[in-house]
Image 1: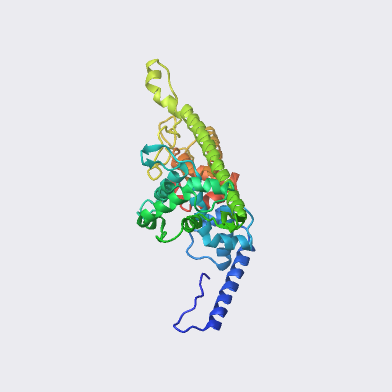
Image 2: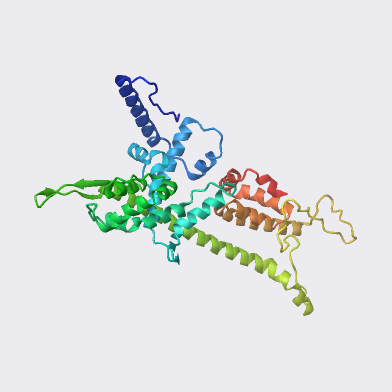
Length: 399
């Protein structure tokens, strides 16, 4: 239930303390097991639950399993749940991903632009939390690690290079850290004691990036010398996660380009059907030609709240009394053909998000919007249910 067991009190009962520690370990292990065995859910269910005020315990476990699986791109096991540490590990891996990325161009002699992946993360956070002023400032943390020279050290360590701690770049990193201890504390939240060794200071930075070291002590010239290298299993795991994240970015970019291509094609189709004729009306009329524009589809999108109902066509005698029907059979058939056409377009746009569907509906009249939504539900009930889930206020779109 999210509770943490900790010992309290002034007295030191060693037996009780051991019992409490064992109880806490047992509870944690049970939680890891339950998350790994939870039912699988899809992304739509996960996103929907994020907006709910209360979730059942089993729903919380299902959401946690989906988050871990989506974050690391691998099957969820109790060991992975423990390693994730409630989402703390992925934050460290994201920071490692940032410092390993190629820096941007030089802005000045002592200032370099962060990699695009870091700048985009800051930008998206500010757009998503527009009214918040306490952002994470990933670029600032990246710049501090860049100034420390961590990237060069990490590239060597990940390549399998062993270090003793007396190398020049390790000494430079330690000296810079001690001279700027207050800035390191303020930006990276890491305390740098002035009497600690360079290898200890490096170990603190590696810990913030989800890395750990292992050592060996061979005999050289009659003395034991300690060599440090990154934990091999840890590196393999992190490289797998970084590759998965890179594939995700490539897939998102591919989908974004496909979406732009489809939207451009749709815009061109709408422009050729309705917009070009409208803009060319003056020139065509000057040539003595009549340009016909569909009365049900104005070129400029009609605002949803202000859409007006359709007007029945006039009879030959000037009246509009058609016995309760506001169009004749031919007009009605044509109207429903257009509704079916736009319903198909709306179905195609669901995968691009709610705003894409709403943008399409904004080009139609109130009657057409109602007809499109009804036809939408008839043609594809599953996608209609998805749209209703993503946009509970869809009824207001009909005007």
